[in-house]
Image (cartoon, rainbow, N blue to C red; front, side, top):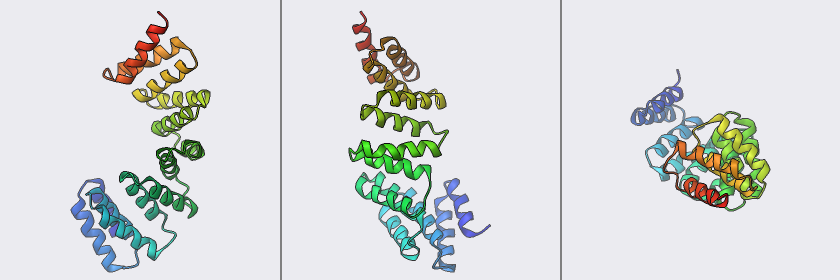
Length: 218
């Protein structure tokens, strides 16, 4: 097992110190090993050393401008820092350089959502669901984005798929309740709000939605 793989195993165990040591050894043995720089950056990210992590991702990109994982890792770090425009640029670079990843499309879509560009986010979130066929969160965020852009029927399809993958997704049930309420299908809306509250009794929005529906039907 090479040092990068050994380090990744340490990361899976949460042994960041051992992982960092192995990745640094890999860099010392091969200063042009872009993977080791990216992996070391990921360790630094995990322990909150964000500025140092950026330096390692930048080093990997300087060695290989097509190191797509470095762009993705930088994008993820920018997203966590709520620097969404810079995150979007990184995920776009990763896609342009050939990263055909559901996670990358998902994050690119989420950046656009955060930048209030929901209509532009739709195709990326759609693509993420095509690649992440069992990811309830991907379908949820795609459905949520569709709903915000007033594509209510399409949103319901995606949110229904989300809860079929994860029957404990209270927010998906809540948003289904909102969507059915928008379509004036009170019985379905009430059912969805009740489902959300069964999962999460303290779900304030679902409780409020249920109260409004009950008042509307007398």
